[in-house]
Length: 342
Image 1 (tube, rainbow, N blue to C red):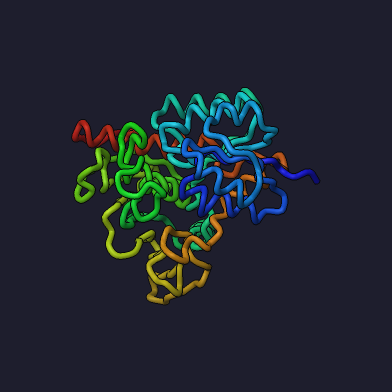
Image 2: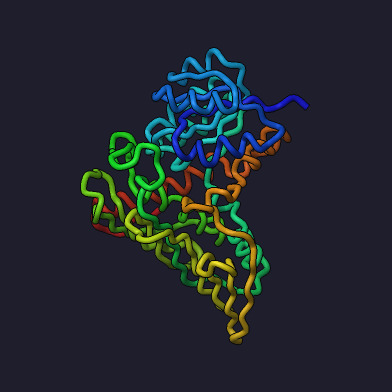
């Protein structure tokens, strides 16, 4: 079997800790090109893994014999690079949020369809073992209906993770477009949609800059969501969580409570209505904390599987667009100070 020839566009931390090492571990993949406006970032990976170095993604797409690319750039570049890659006949794995507007997201999907290439969005929360176990429990029907939920994604901020540190692109509206809600909140919106197998019907949100004074995007967001089937809950995204990280979700169901990521040993705990408690050791949630980066996200394997097997992307552009649309509705709610119907 010929190897899948992959190029990585954007050589920051998400590429460094997730995409590149996970591609390198997959014997079906050959890393053949690295692109970043900062030449030394791309050069460092080429020196380690081999391959060509570019500072212009257009040159990379034109000159390199590629099958697929990972788009790991600031948010505002996701759409133009994805569309260019699709038009060049490359399969695309794009980081979240997939775009900064609904129009961009639709254009990305159309470009992939027109060129018969895969477009997958990096919503890796769906692939984490505790979430897979929780989905299994919900699908069994034993827990009954989810009535209330709360989900959180919070850490100390991108400066603890990004190669650019304080003042990097995450904090700049012209590069990020959306702050903590686009960085972390879109992950948890996508997770809730997937866990409940339901769509968001209404949102109301509050955002603010509570600590990152040099930022011109939100560093905290709190959202209330109502799902189409009636469940209600909250989503919190924060860049000011100290110390450590919170990536937990709690589902209050008609027959019990499911706690995900609230205990370091038992990643999923079910408290049944009859007071019996079940605890499951499923494996950890991938995280940005030390040690969490060693957990395989599963996203690269799923992308490669789909491309090589010719099966539909596990998390296609359409799913990414639905989750993005919720975040954009929240921004509308914040701006207009009202409940927004999806």
